Length: 316
Image (cartoon, rainbow, N blue to C red; front, side, top):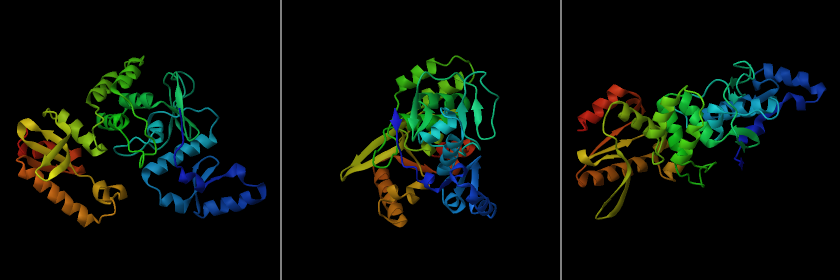
């Protein structure tokens, strides 16, 4: 599979091998003055452009820089592949891109990248000209090595249906594909953690914050919720809720900042309009009888705080 996505950061790259000899000294003076930032050997980016980039774009830029400066055919994997597949991260991206090199091929690291000594996959994909592990292999590699919430968030995203109007990559997996890729693991390392992630993964999860909340609900031993339950009243459809516990008559909603900041969520409305619409929606839900409890990132990350909130709301 060959995939192309928007890569605006490449327009701000400078490759020293493309600079004519007489101008190279002038470029290095500009770099020392702070006009350019070195990403890896021979690859620089304009400092002003770098400052304007988000963390996801910065890590993708580092991956592209390593690809441009390394030997042809290098295979990006793990978190580098996750970034290329546009899977969400909980926390921070690693400091260096990761590549799979095969067992016993090289040492554990290089100055520009971290070399993962895993068996080379039977197949790979290409994203924006970069060789990358398949979506299934990428999620299994993450499942074997990353914390459970991170693995579940990425698997949730890989299983979910994407909106082609906003998603740069719409490829998705099935649980069967995850299981098939998992069965190919020839090492016990991380198998149990990966199996747990696969069992918890659900493409109905709407965001990394919801994935994190669901993992911690599981770790607390609380009942598993129904995801994206539809509610309607006499006036019509109210909408879909993040979590629903019918036995307890309880609705749970994760509120991330993106709901109030991202353009696609605002849809031309002001933040005040969105907050008011949320209040009206919640009033309609409460009028049907269920209790509603909401939380944000601080509660989702904390087992004690999440436990206290859900227990106070009546979940046992």
